[in-house]
Image 1 (cartoon, rainbow, N blue to C red):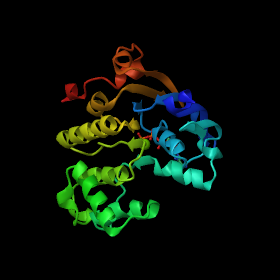
Image 2: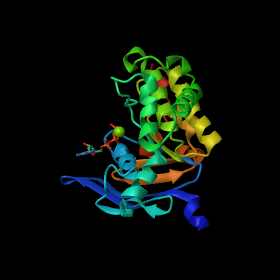
Image 3: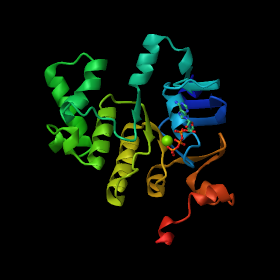
Image 4: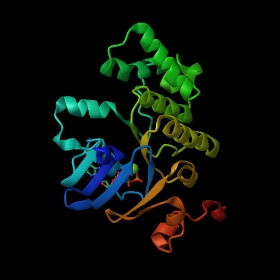
Amino acid sequence: MQKETENIIVLKNVCKAFASVEVLKNINIDIKKGETAVVLGKSGTGKSVILQCIVGLLKPDRGEVNVFGKNIFGLNEDEFLEFRKKTGFLFQSGALYDSMSVRENLEFPLIRHFNLSKSELKERVAKSLDEVGLLSAIDKMPSEVSGGMRKRIGLARTLILAPEILLYDEPTTGLDPATSRDISHLIRKVQKERNITSVVVTHDMECVDITADRIAVLKSGEFVTVGLPEDVKKSEDPYIKSFFIQTNEKY
Ligand SMILES: Nc1ncnc2c1ncn2[C@@H]1O[C@H](COP(=O)(O)OP(=O)(O)OP(=O)(O)O)[C@@H](O)[C@H]1O
Ligand SMILES: [Mg+2]
């Protein structure tokens, strides 16, 4: 039993094609409890598809996605809902509902998943916003806050369900370096404080340095390496090396 709880996310020979294009050819990875795995790969290589397979939004053509020791595509409806409650997904845009205030955006998943009193709702929303440093935005509309704030509010809305897994799709893309750094530290902080198992898809090397316990590099539908950051960075493979070239040398 212990072994099952050790590896929280296990992908075994996962394959996924769209029309005749094989995007994922053979994806294998074991992610342990409390670990943050960062996925690197060129644009269009299938990183978002991997996240969508882990959360059950896409079903692989072949292979297994085992989360919390069970194949998620073998779960019944109640088990699947329970799994989704424990698995947070931070979309690139933050995916806030524009017609709802920040408070209502955060209340929404709580009302859907829990039967809480008004005061409990209020308390949890405030606590979650405070955690991302945005309690002051509680009565604002999404259109009134900046891109970085939207991402933090999106994270607060994900954290409010106290997930055991968090999947981040390009959490810092489009943000200035200082805000990106804040988000990366926030990812690390929640991972450490709550022992959350995370997968981070990013092109932001500072985010990799701050968050990664292990790095997986995706190429041609497979992970060409999965290893500790210090080992992956030492690779002589030109494709792998290309991710670690200092971008500021260009300027
Ligand atoms: N639902 C879908 N239907 C058809 N094709 C899809 C679907 N989702 C993804 N694809 C295709 O799969 C490939 C990989 O897409 P994916 O979004 O995973 O790339 P990515 O690695 O996340 O790229 P980026 O870094 O640009 O976000 C692309 O060719 C894309 O067009
Ligand atoms: Mg993507």
